[in-house]
Amino acid sequence: MFDHLAGQPALMRMVLWKQLERPEHTDHERTVYGRIVDALVTTYDLAPGGSSAQAAERAQDLLFAVLGLATAPFTLAPSAAQPARSSERSVQQRQDLHRAVSTIAANLTLRAGARATDEG
Image 1 (tube, one colour):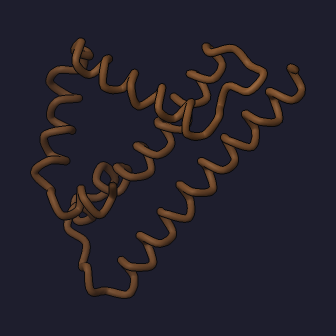
Image 2 (image 1 turned 90 degrees about the vertical axis):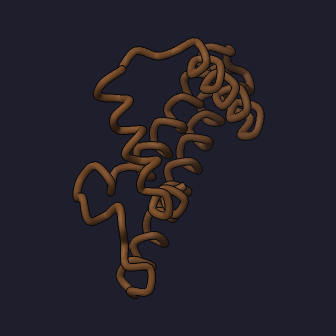
């Protein structure tokens, strides 16, 4: 996701503009994000032994973490929107970002499974 946004800086500018100028959610956005949350619940088995509401909360946390990590560089420093793709540092940063997102996803999934076992 980060690489896609880095390659399409106009898209990230539009996303940021939309959040500033029109922060209310549209019905379409609610539908799309609802589908993503449902897919995360199913894909990562976030509902074993728990309620669907708890599973949706876990999926929302996961989505929030992934989107936040993928978009953070663009909101922290303007130059991050156009990384030097050939630099060793930018390659390492993308690898670190990928590892961080993977770790968060794994931890959320493990905690969801542990909570489900405790609750079940």
